[in-house]
Length: 275
Image (cartoon, rainbow, N blue to C red):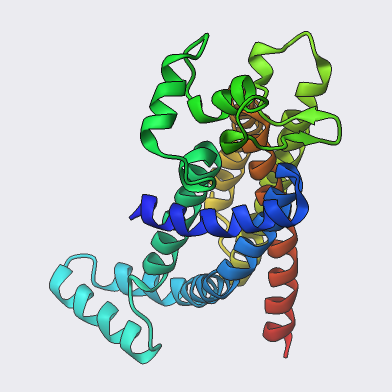
């Protein structure tokens, strides 16, 4: 399934590349289009999460009331979901679809010759055997080493003076290769901070409403958020160091678009709640 979707996305990315004649610009526009396509699913998922959050108080009350009667608890919980016109798995389908599409795009950007240029597998295998060094991204390396001599596998990967086929860990002497990874880390930090702030506001609001004076979930949330604020940027930087800059550019754009989307949707939902 991932290969099938990546193949379809490949036609779109190839169309954009032929239009712009630049792989970097094509990836940026492609990322925006994919985010727009996923927007209805994201909105549906966010609405489901908002509705689920509002039901948490009732769910906790039922769990406390029927903690010694699992059968009755399950019945009451199902009745609650029916009254609210919700399913316990409402958000799962949207999440699964989004994950499949995101992985398909990763396949596409990782293997542009297969999914974008539609180069024959035998040709790719032949070039792979000629590579000077083994890599996790052979098709990108093929473009870097042989693209200038073969039009069929050629892609213009020069973007703002950066070679998007370069892997930062293999070119540490060239500081320019660290620009996209560093921007990716910054966007990851902003994304994590934004998520932390939104979660903290929600937890604080619930704590005030329930007037809970004991140790609350807020402490656990803050501890988890603190760990994430350190771990996520470190992971982002480590991964981007060993990936071609073209792939890192896609991740960077996805992060930027996700931040914009999250701020926009949060403002929209807040207005709806106030209304």
